[in-house]
Length: 124
Image (tube, rainbow, N blue to C red; front, side, top):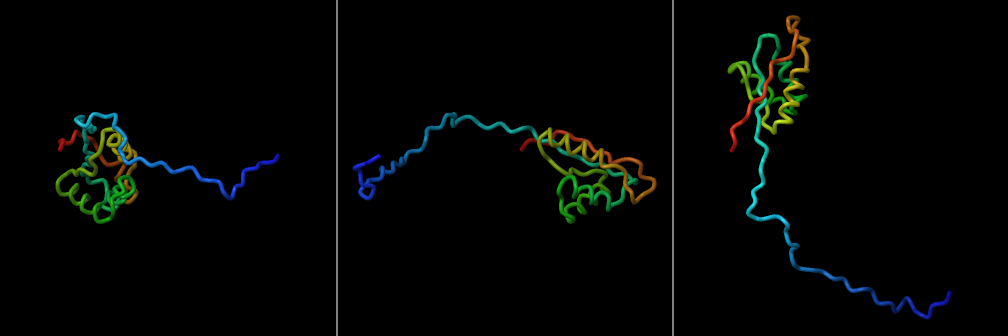
């Protein structure tokens, strides 16, 4: 195949740019609705050690040792503590994980998981 066109003299296509924002399809007056928040609450008892509670808070909620220690003391002194505030589906999952965490192997009298429940949290 022969081509009389010389590639060394070819001209590149011009680059076209636009400086206008694309039009939004959403109404700027529409507010995004957030899912209502829920608190995950752990209750105190005498059948679980501080080490168990701190370990569980780290494994299930990702809390660092210092935060977990403060929460464990709150549970101990106030009888309960909010350990997470999130949307309902995740709150239910975390509650179920706490309830399935099992007894404290450090205490022979421990025969179940900590008590945990969720409740609606105040909206900001």
